[in-house]
Length: 372
Image (cartoon, rainbow, N blue to C red; front, side, top):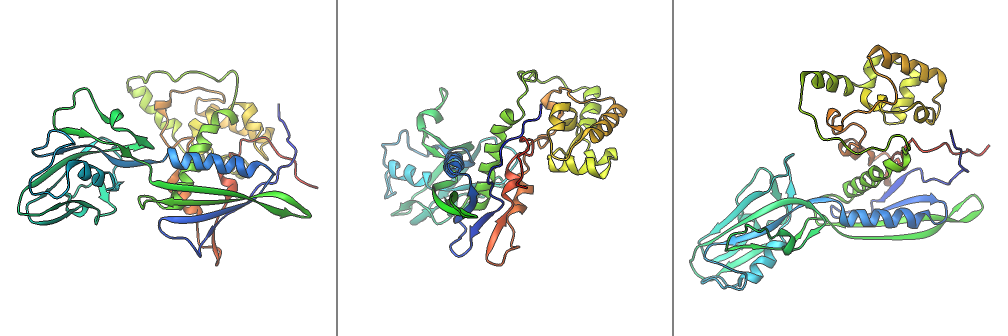
């Protein structure tokens, strides 16, 4: 049953303050919101930004000739505790699809300062702050350090990084994965017509250079939206646990190819194709997993388009309301492409970058009444 909600005041764009923006800081303004929604959206985004974005960090350290963190090293000015603190400040940018831990190392045998720039190159990770000091050698001596780098989210303590099989001499350390260092939001009053009690959300984001503030905001909005999908698409007959992945078979391979075929390949009418595009339904598998009731809730999608889609799916041996193992669908199916989203922030406006903020809201939401 379609439910129509009273009209909400919705922000239609997101503006970045170009006058103050840098590579590691940006201020974003979105307006207008109905009263109270500025805090709802602002606080939610702030929590996700600080806790849920991925990054890479050192999880353990091994220094030649050192058995524990309270040792000192002949010829090195800093003790091991200070060296570990310095290593925590080294920032890594991940450049690989794989997220397996990697071992990196640094070696020095000349008097002077050892920095993050002396770490041996690795194709998987880029060091952002190469001038970060690791230690100082006050005489000619050999310093060798090996450390493990992992990809994670938020923060992990040294206790969490310690494993039962950790050998003597390997020192687990705290890991700060989050590339966002600080987030602040404020809600101000803004005018809509003669009313001045609507919300304007002002969001300030600081990062450590591993990610831009714009990309951080896009990723956090995508994460938040992904977590809300289960509520937006709620169906009491469609709740089920994820099945264990099946072994790949030739039949599964053919089905996978069919389900991940683009909806543009099934020759729909312009009206039906536009409805699917607006609903972010891009693959045949996504379409087949929708129920008739869900399809009819989309704006401008009527029974004629529904009949057309059912006929096209029938020609492929499919129908609406089907359920498939998640392993048969490509990872991007039904999700948010952050690479595609990165084009949302453009230079169309001479004074500010503008993002179509309505794209961050799932078009599955019930229709909202428009003013006459």
